[in-house]
Image (cartoon, rainbow, N blue to C red; front, top):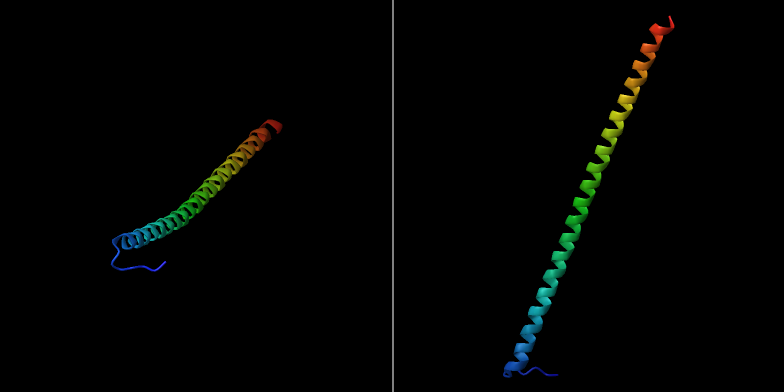
Length: 80
């Protein structure tokens, strides 16, 4: 199909097509940015969750160790 520059309908079609392509490319770039941002945010939350889990686990180990030491200290005077 040859485009006649003097025909307003074909010019309007071409301009509408260009606008549609530009809009779709903009939406695609926006989606890619959101995916990358979401992935970075997800990795950050995973890191925070892992650090909190390790901190709580360490606290439980310290509490269990303290309870074991306290139990052995309380048993020794009773045994002697």
